[in-house]
Length: 285
Length: 295
Image (cartoon, rainbow over all chains, first blue to last red):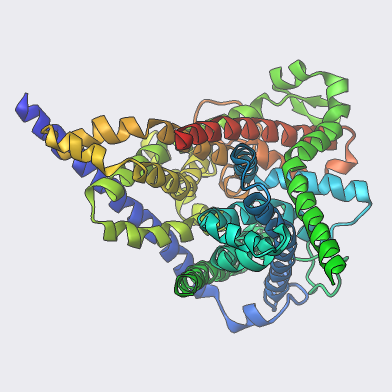
């Protein structure tokens, strides 16, 4: 009996250890493969030029159109998501502070909304677009992605706002400020680190999401100049180039994937650094 | 001055309420809009027929969703079978057996991986998993395949789900009070025994929810799966055959759907189905989590 126990102990400890180290292995493997394959085909031309004639048959050019398009969509959609999400998150934490049950229901719904796949948002965005008589354009893409990222912004920001001591609000009320003044001038400042995290998370999702812009943003080789023009996006550029039978074009897809991964990693690290910095500032004040 | 402040305050109150209401109503609006767009097909063919037949011939207005639902479930199940044990044991290791430092190092890594877009996982799948399936797995079973198969889809999905599930599992293991483990130790339990009898039992609802939400995510994942799964309408139990999950169906055919009557309605029905299933799974398992958090 005792011996059996000892063996069980050992076996399961080993399984757990192997699971986590193989996990690190797999994850490292992904990054290495993407970078090794990507950097082989990466050149300066890829980053600073839009596709020229015959690009998809191996001609000259780069994916600047997609990089710019993705940045526009990510920027526009996170801006929209912030405009909608920040007031909503503040409302949950200031106006509804005494209604614990309502708060919980709202959080529950938002969490569920977070889980809806982007292809559903894409289909919905497309129907909305048809309904409004819009064409596939930068604006339609921005709106669709914003719908997708707003729940993320609210919940991320709300998580930080929830940790702010309630006494701060009471002090602000006692000094005669209204609820919305308390929300935007006091609570927003205290939760600024959460705001940064939320904004960067939304930005990252906006750059990387493909299924939601597939039908709404369109695709073009030109760099968009107006909101009603279609826009290429980096994930779709990767996807379409991979569909080509030409090996050179496929190589470029790998390079574009490496570019996308680097952008995502920079955003992720930046989010960590900035949110640490601002949450420390709050403690000192 | 006072009046201006009052008006401003009222206006921002209203704006905050409107934004919140908009977001809360969003799932309802999405559901109604998709249903409305799919209703043409529903009236024409009927729900039972759509969900019960497997013929897919858009030109003849035959829309049977069985192959797609089957593929989706198959891919998701495979992904679950690969990713659940690994993330479960890794989460135990990170929270119970290793130093706290290890978890601190791992957390940003997990975050970055969870943030990598699905198209990049798809690229990785094409580079690694697809050749692996066609050159290693298939020959072992005396089967020839291009590698673009249900199995490849399941494996890529599994890798994508690991960071997501791991995050939730770690969180739920961390909420188990330290005292519970100490009590278990003081009764003479070994490390694994106290994990087995105290930690896992205590966080059981959290574990179930993490698995459920992980599966919901896998079910709705589009691009990565679509890139490696082969996209052929087939009903086969063999995981080395190509499949065609629901999200891939929508994404692949959006371009041409306007030219064939009822086709767009059918694709919207697919989106509606996806929405309903995933929303239901999310609502159920999130409810689990909230119930345990409130206790």
